[in-house]
Amino acid sequence: AAVEVVLDDGVTAGERAVADLLGSLNMKDTPPLLVNDGEAARPIPDPLTDRVGGSAVSPWMALDQMLIVPRQAGETLRGTVEVSDRWEWGAKVWIFGPDGLVWRSGIGPGGSEAFEIRCEQAGLHVICGDAGLANWRVSVDDAPLLMPTSVHRPMQTCGMPTPMRFYVPEGVGSFSITTRAADPEMRVTVSAPGGDPVLDVELERREQVHEVAVPNGADGTVWTVLVSRGDRDLHRTMPLYFSEEIPGMVACAQ
Image 1: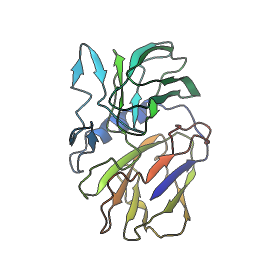
Image 2: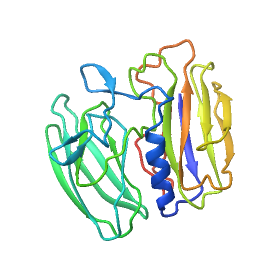
Image 3: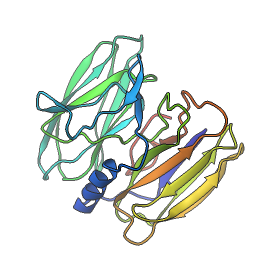
Image 4: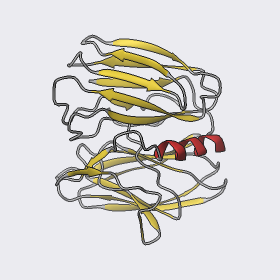
């Protein structure tokens, strides 16, 4: 199954988006997202409290995003991307700022690479990787690494409904979601913060495009997508992704 979120355009994130993002990550009424580190599925740790050596460190991941929020324009972000030697393939990693791509690299198995980025604008910066399996992680020095921000259904979710979140930039009036599924009993529900669902649809085997209007005040916030499973086990299924062809939005391997 796949759900593509396509946004009309992207505008610099503001302080309101940061507050909404932090609030959404502290929601207590949704099941935890899980991460598979190659040994066992477990809840993703709280990045706001789980720090290692003064840095925020992600667990080993696949196709996931992490959002970092510079405090002010001109701030320098420093960190390191590591790739596990557990498998024979490496990882591609992108970092996007409010105005688009600011860093990218390809790293081989067992390798690592440091990055140093001068943020020309304050706002959300997103790290996104393509590694096939959960075999890359990122540490960021002296900046929040906010999770969970997965835009796909993580592996080994044990069949439970899985909430996912994505950011709708300020100034976006509408976007479209394309759905298609092997299991027609799956449902996709899209909700803006604090409101009723703006889309609640059962997936069909054919591709469908759904236009979503952004309510007043709901742009510049983090929305929630809930994917409910059908009868089939969706292990290793990734039904939601952003397209790297969309200007102003996050690129994530499909």
